[in-house]
Length: 249
Image (cartoon, rainbow, N blue to C red; front, side, top):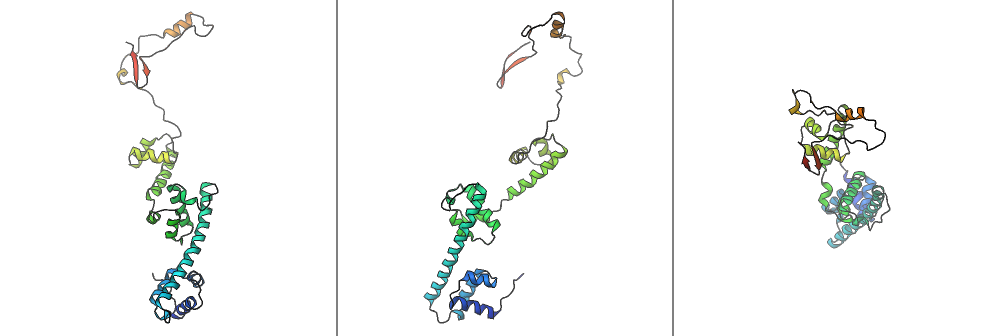
């Protein structure tokens, strides 16, 4: 859909104000609600507007106006970045120290600045923060998808509070690693573990043990009045790290 067309009279008045009166392009763009690139395009294409001005002077006028625009944009940009970096890092940082921040912080700062001010000059912003300009256009699709999945996992755990990352992965149909990564990223943990009853398959359908509880018999036959009168334990082997020391038959 094409934007609103500017009448030839208004266009001529804008070009005249720039050439004869020396009004800056940024000021004209603000006064007439236009994009600065549109006015620059008119100046390059409309030879009649520049009649009587030699080529060198035309270039000088355009370059001088561009420098004024970049200077003003740079001043505004530094001010916005100083405010943003104070809110992000919770500490005062001068404009000379912004470019020394870690790259993830500078990239996050640039995206916050563009989000709050869509008309930010990305070329100046990338130079000021010492970033590659193309990184400002990269959309973090993974971050958005992780946030959505994290919300879905939280909703799932409301009905199934004992689900761990394995159950979550089975429910949503993705890998265990992905479920574990997202749950760790957003600090999502099961509210409690599901109770498990240890069942030894080798003991199924077999008669009860013939061995009696010797400790119970000893307590009945002897009166215990102080600590360390009797010790008792029940084990097959002694754990030691990832192995065991000995086995009792």
